[in-house]
Image (tube, rainbow, N blue to C red):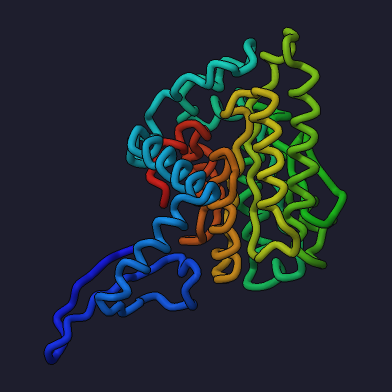
Length: 317
C-alpha cells in the first residue's frame, strides 16, 4: 500500500492509496479518497494486516528478505573457479568426495569422475533445419574422446525411442545410432528425465550408510532439445529435488543442463520456466547462440556448475 498526496488543479488536493492486493475494495489499483474517507481506508488496512493469514504471509516475506540479505552473491566467472561451500550439516556422510571439489577443467578428468547421460530430443521437429545432424555431430566428438580416454562413462538416450547406448561410443557408433533412431512424435521431456532421475535415486537411497555410497559418481544429465515439452518436466524436477533433500543427499549429487538446439522461441520460454521452479538449483539452461558442435558441447560440459555454487549466483543467472 502506498499513500500519496497529489496537488490537483483547483482547490481540491487528492489523497491516493495504491492498494495491492485490493482488499475488500473493488479491483482497482488507485483509490482517490476524500479526507473523510482516509480513516476508513486505514482501518480496513489495519484489520486486514491483523488477520492471521496476512500476518503469516508478512512473517514469511520478512524471513525471506532476511535470508536474501544474508546470501553471498558471486559472479558467473567467480562461480566457475570456486570451491563448493560445505553441504548442510544433516547431509548423509560418506558421499563421493568429488561433490565437495571444484568441477573439472579438463574433459578427461570430468569423464573420469562424473557419470554423464545425454537425453536427445527425437521429436518430429528435430528433422527441421539440420538439427538432427547437428546433435549427432556434437555428440560424435565427445564420444570419440570418451572411448579413447574414459570408456563407459557416457550414455545416450532419446525422448521417444527406447534405444540407448552406453559402451563403445565413437563417431561410427553414434552415426549408426542416429540412423537407427529417426525423429518422430512429441517431446515428452519430463517422462524421459524421470526415468533417469529415478534410476539414480534408486542407487543413492539404498546406499546411504554403506561403503558403496562413496562410489556413486555425481550425475550430469544433458538434455539436447529444440522444442517446448509436451509434458511437465518442471514437476519431475521439483519432485526429485524434494526427494533428494528429504533423504539428505548431497546437493551436488545431480545436475541437469537443458541445451537448446535451434532458434524456436517457444523452446526458450519453456526452458526459462525450468529455472524458476523449485529445482534445488539442479537446473541450468543453455540458450541457442551458435551451432552446437563438439567443441561447444565440451565447453557446456566443463562450464556446468555445482548446484550449491549456482545457489550463490544472482537470481537471474
